[in-house]
Image 1 (tube, rainbow, N blue to C red):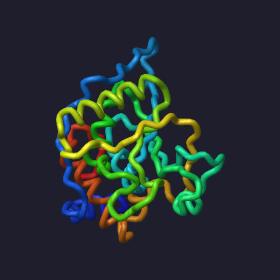
Image 2: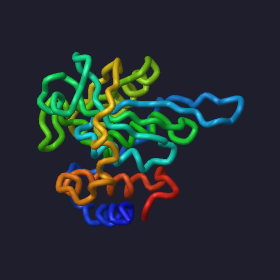
Image 3: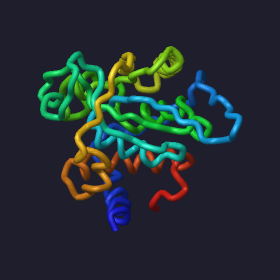
Length: 223
């Protein structure tokens, strides 16, 4: 029942007050999935910051090859993170999501394409719309040199093509520690489809990924 309501509200929210989805080219530089001898699924992770984690979590949960999305905090100097501290700007952490995925199904570059196109506006500095502060900054938290190299190359590719009309503000930051957010933040959009912020901000992003990246959706996605 929750999924049916969720899908219905997605349809109602297509004209939400967000930046228009931008048609982006595929990443010219990407990571290649390493083959496995036993044929088992491979798991990789990427940590992304693009404003409120409720919204970005809901976007990436829909994608084929994504096995888990966890909302959390990263990028601060403090050795702990809670929603109250982060939202008050006391820790320098950003609201982030940790996306676990099978790189043989969806690539790191494809995830970045969704991130820059529909998950958030990468040209805004330390904010997303009315959510203002360092905790809402745009960032890719890279786990190694390969992730940094691909993200950096894609930003340069997009800036060189002038697809946004403004320079991309997304920062590349090394991932040191990821703190999972409190349980009530996890899977928030699907569990709270009538909440005001969800309807105004999150569901339009969900609708945009369904419209512009239909070929990347999970086969059992709600129509």
